[in-house]
Amino acid sequence: MNADRQTQILAIDPQAIDLVLVQRAAEVLRRGGLVAFPTETVYGLGAAALQPDAVGRIFEAKGRPQSNPLIVHVASVDAARALVTHWPDAAARLAERFWPGPLTMVLPRASCVPDVVTAGGPTVALRLPSHPVARALLDALHDPVAAPSANRSSRISPTRGEHVIRDLDGRVDLILDAGPAPGGIESTVVDLTDSPVRLLRPGLITPELLRSVVGEVQIDPAAHREGVERSPGRHGRHYAPRARVECLERGAGERIGRLASAGLRVAALIRRAEPAVVDVVCACEVLPSDPAGYAAGLYAALHDIDAAGPDVIVIELPPDEEAWLAVRDRLLRAARTD
Ligand code: TXA
Ligand code: MG
Image (tube, rainbow, N blue to C red; front, side, top):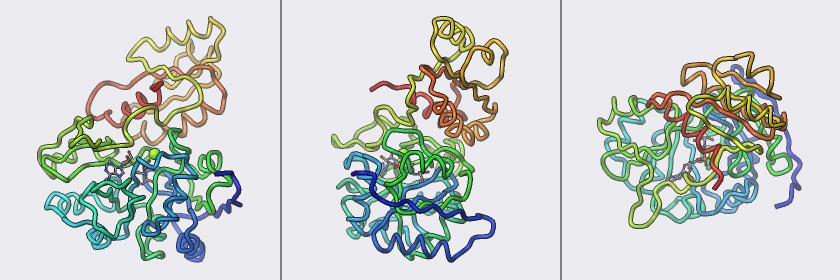
């Protein structure tokens, strides 16, 4: 698709929501248009989920393969239940504990869900977001909204309105800009179609939290079912800056020094600023030492680093521990070259 739309940007205060703006956004969705909106994780690129043509525009705007299904955002548990054929006990308990919030549940789809949403598959991914602007939009539309992250396919997810504009200007009808998305990385995705519950994408709801509600959780996302991949969006390079990315368990400082003395423009993503690093890089982002704080700043840091135009980005990985699973997943996938 050519970048041929006029993108309208509406600033909206999440603490004092102007419902006139929300109604305008809902009207765009109702007419089959695309609206980028904030959630508590990242910004989403929304279309009315029950309108197949509108959903098709999401794939065009992102350059996303049609084989990668979308998350459907709902306003209530009842709205979620209307989109599935079965609402298992685990879904009820997880919804009770984590909805509204950054948890996506994969369940058997009802026939009202268009094929384009599920990539023709037998399941649908559902999420009830907690961000007040997302909730107001869903309430105003009275219908579910299909929304992937509002970035071009395989690139860094947006946590601010300006990230959406950078990637999708002219490809989205309207952006509701409510400032930073607080969580910073995408929702946790779990498959509830059999037992035990399977983690398809780590996120802000950690395995430990999931286990506290459903007991056993299968963590390995690489499993296949009858030859059909369970999590089609989970392979290849993702969350990727333009520059080459190197992730190191340790020794980032030395590596940065070597690359810089070889004449490369090097950027660094680290957790402790050291003069030996700061003095030789073209951009340096220092993120907090707790997983939630790190996640909240991660994509904004990658966007800023990328804008400095480095040849290579060196990332010092946080510890290989379960609490860091989601962050390490995003970092390692940003570094992949396939
Ligand atoms: O936090 C989030 O989840 C954000 C906000 C906007 O809600 N959305 C988001 O969407 O990250 P997206 O499209 O970037 O990632 C959705 C992930 C993909 O890996 C996709 O393959 C997977 O969920 N997915 C969607 N439907 C699925 C299904 N029926 N079965 C298995 N995986 C599914
Ligand atoms: Mg995405």
